[in-house]
Every structure is written in C-alpha cells, then in structure tokens.
Length: 137
Image (cartoon, rainbow, N blue to C red; front, side):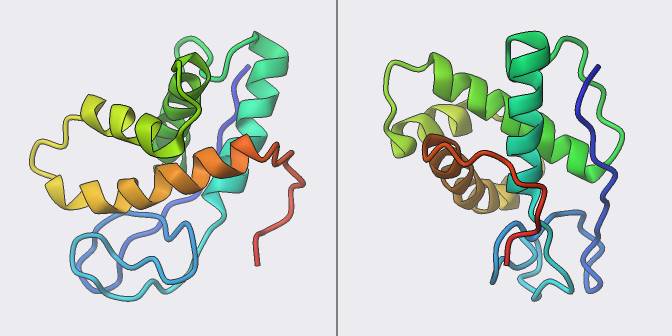
C-alpha cells in the first residue's frame, strides 16, 4: 500500500507541468505567475508518515508515479530518506546532496524550482510537522 495524490497542473502560458508549492512560486520554465497553488509539501509529509508507519521507510518499494503530484511525492520521499540517512541534519547540506543526484537532462530550468522546494520540505519535516490534512494558507 502506498500514498498517492491525483493532482496535475500545467502552466497556462507555456504548458509546463509543475506545482506551485508555496506562495509566489512561478512557472520554472517561463516565469509566469501560477494560477493556483497546492500544498504538496503537506501531502508529502502525510505520505511520509504513513509510509514510515506502514512500511518502516519513507519510500515504499515499487512506488508507481501516475500523476504530477506523485512525481513530486516520489522526489520528496527520496529526499526525506536521504535526510534521515545523511550524517548531517543541515538542510542546505542535504539539499545539495539531493540536487547532485538528480539528472535534469533537458530540464535544467527545474533546478532552481527544486532548490527552493527541498529546503521547505526538509525544514517542515525537521520541525516535526505532523500532517493535519489541511491546506496551507
């Protein structure tokens, strides 16, 4: 059993799929303001706690990606596992280690987007942000 989220969004200007994970996050490709935001970090934390309880680890075996949100969740679960396994609890150090593992290929423009995402995720996890199921506001 695995935690999934069916959420998909594309930039209305350029069509790039992405999630505006915090207020002010713009399209990583064209810089256009997001039409909507989604608390994918809260969703990732709910999933992480669920997986830790159910599987004993953050990323369950054979996690299948079936939506944009699932893609973010998988990246989040990998990041949280690295955070738990890393010798350092320094968010910036762990973010750097995570970013070095990602092959952006033709999507280098996503690098700043994820460099903003992972520290927010890791800090909320570090603060013991138990999921509430409520949207961030």
